[in-house]
Image (cartoon, rainbow over all chains, first blue to last red; front, side):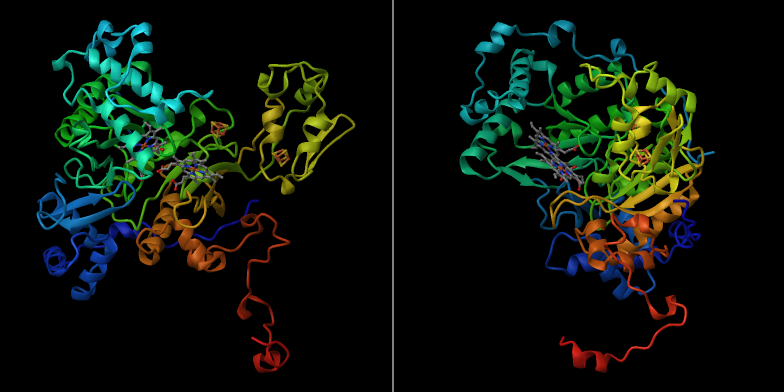
Amino acid sequence: MGTDLPAISAGLSLYLKGDANMDEIKKAIVEFAESSKKTKFYFKDIEKAVQKVVPDAKMRDIKKACTALINDGTLIYFSTGSSTMYGLKGRGMTEDPE
Amino acid sequence: MALFEPKNEQKEIKYAEMRIYSDEELNNYTEEELKNFKIKHDIPDLEELEKGPWPSFVSDAKQGALHRRKLADDRMLIDRDVIEDMLGQLQVSFDDGETHWKHGGIVGVFGYGGGVIGRYSDLPEKYPSIAHFHTVRVNQPASKFYNSDFLRTVCDMWEYRGSGMMNLHGSTGDLVLLGTTTEQLEPIFFELTHELGQDIGGSGSNLRTPSCCIGKARCEFACYDTQDLCYELTQYYQDELHRPAFPYKFKFKFDGCPNGCVASIARSDMSFIGTWRDDIRIDQDAVKGYIAGDFIPNAGAHAGRDWGKFDLQKEVLDLCPSKCMKYEDGVLTIDNAECVRCMHCINTMPRALKPGTDTGVSILLGAKAPILEGAQMATLIVPFMKAEAPYDNIKEFIEKVWEFWMEEGKNRERLGELMQRFGLPKFLEIMELPPAPHMVKTPRENPYVLWKEEDVPGGWTRDIKEYRTRHKR
Ligand code: HEM
Ligand code: HEM
Ligand code: SF4
Ligand code: SF4
């Protein structure tokens, strides 16, 4: 063994990338969720939708915006146990299935 | 130094101070009562499961059900009948050949996107006490080092606020608490974090609870500090653990050496296996000691019967998968370049052989269970990397993999499936890693690398039209 590996250049930067416009991204997320026929969204679909409106929005910023929307109660998580989706609180999702 | 060290000294949990139930309440039925006990539903198929040679969860569940029947009303916060209804509904599922659990829902504790898995019965009229029956995953302490005070405290809390049923340390490693109502989730979370000093674990599309072997705490084979790396990455990646934004689940597991006591190679998207890049250390006197019968081989494991005199040739040299060991004139030699680190010789003669001293990790990617495609073992991607705090090299590699997976992975696509879709050569190119023979099982039979013209000194010329005149598409 003893394979010499080249230095890995990417990474860590993921965490150091600056904040884009949080409010703009949050607005784009809510607008996407409100206009869609679906009630549950994968993160990736949210990411794509936001980047259509705010092209320079980074994945990490979109995640931060989602977390902020979760924390202020606008969005909620939906989980099957193996995968997780986001939805607008009070819109069509079975919050209480009874 | 690792970036994360525990901020406060670990609180010692004393069951005597934390307990909810008295000994009488915990042992509240007799063997005789258990033998005659019938739950309120007919469960003939489940009772079949009790008959085989193996311990049965049905028998365990019946004990729990009887125990709850005999507890006083104010000694449990969710319905007394949860276990009986769970068994009843399972019998109906057997009858119908389909599940009666609804898949998923909106439950969780505030701010966390994982660790609690919503489960609801779709027969709530018939089985009202399991209308809500959520699962809680508790992040196990590193190496599952905890004492019975801790375990008994968790058990009491769960009997009081949940069904009392749990399964411990399956593939995820977590302590899995089965069945409670939505109202109980926040109080359970509070007790776990504030009273027991234990976080809840991962579920859904996030980083799952990392898990490690006992490593340097107890095992002399450990080539790096598995507990330290597990703790460091658990703390460093809290956001990934609790706020899901991955395409699907992602698991880290840490084995200190190729013996693989947490089976990271089969059960994690990113498997860390301790290894060394210098030579296996040999104590020639101890080798002679084994031959002379001074030491019991395998450190006394498999000693249940007499296997006869230790035979170095038959039991070690002949079993070396790459046949790279020799014993001549009383000297054991190993051609270390050919050693595949199967650990067999070291396990057999631990006094005589030890891993080398220039140690680190191999990183393997892409194991998964069979949900899509088949089950898959991990593929070696990084043959060797140093593993020393604060592990910046490892974190950089992790994030590079995640960046690729989050960018290219489809919804619900595991890393292993994505690697398959792209193919190993392409994946290595993206990771900026050179292909190495260690990455395939039989490199000579599997020429998995397609060279590009610029990789080959002198390049080549190729007339594709001329080629097609001889080879139809
Ligand atoms: C009583 C017998 C049961 C056994 C032996 C059992 C066993 C398991 C095992 C081994 C796992 C993998 C978890 C891990 O590796 O940590 C698991 C996962 C799980 N179990 Fe069970 N389980 C039982 C009953 C239940 C019940 C009654 C429910 C809910 C109604 C349930 C809900 C779940 C959920 C939600 C998961 C996670 C699924 C995922 O990650 O996609 N289990 N179970
Ligand atoms: C050749 C046979 C098998 C292979 C290669 C295999 C492989 C795996 C792997 C790689 C994982 C972890 C990765 C993941 O969760 O995605 C896993 C998890 C699991 N396996 Fe297997 N498995 C095999 C057979 C079985 C069998 C026979 C059972 C049960 C009867 C079983 C039950 C489980 C459970 C309960 C989990 C945990 C799932 C979870 O954490 O959600 N496996 N298996
Ligand atoms: S994996 Fe290796 S280091 Fe870890 S406990 Fe097992 S034998 Fe020891
Ligand atoms: S670890 Fe395995 S492959 Fe390496 S020398 Fe020992 S028996 Fe041979």
